[in-house]
Length: 359
Image (cartoon, rainbow, N blue to C red):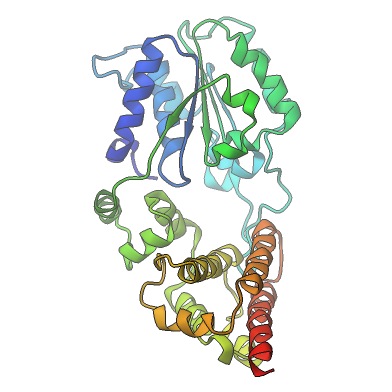
């Protein structure tokens, strides 16, 4: 992953956090869209807080014993709490330690690991906060995503947020602040981390060696540059596969079951495929409701043809089906069968309008 220092759009949030820390704030929640660098910022702030030199810049020196321990992933006064499904974020773990191998067909091998932050993980903080800091300085707890806290874990965390031990900093991170429990939000100071300006994001992606149509890829990622890089690392849709799936969607009422069977490749990632279908549906709703085409500005003619036959109710049911598949995309499903299934539902939902049109 790129150095957080290159992500210039994070500076306003970093400045806000520095001001809060100077006032003695002990619980800060960084929130904003996924893929804009909130986690990287939180870990960078943790390094700064643990640094024993404290240079004038306020940034970690990188040379003191504390910085060396943090870099090695075994600082005794730092705790990183994440769901097991995000174990690669824990200091000292490699990607191989945190991730299972992908399933054949593009499914991700995290089907059997928890996506929640459990109460036993939070209770482990007692061992950190119940004794003096090992290095005699600050203690830092980085936790995220905060919306992954289950109710018992959240309740266990509340006491620490309400009565923090001396010189302890809680840094929580959230991609979906509306999914966080109000009791957690009320005990933290919220700092929003906004997505970068488009021109800045594109320049940054070019500097990181990202390839392809970066403007389109950034649009599809909702303006989140790290999401684009993550696709490169984790394997998004191959450009040829993406073009083939879009070609099927563009056929609209002319799309047949035979087209689906011949057009879906044997292997493809379910999550990325569903995301492409969702963007198509969102643009359709935007078009029907008088809005602009965000993801497919060149497909106005296709949406015009669809609008004559595809009701918003039928499109909504298809979007619901996509939502269901997205929720189980990490399980070891047959990727081709799953993608074919939702495309056949697309055909059927449009077919309802075709049948009514003929009556």
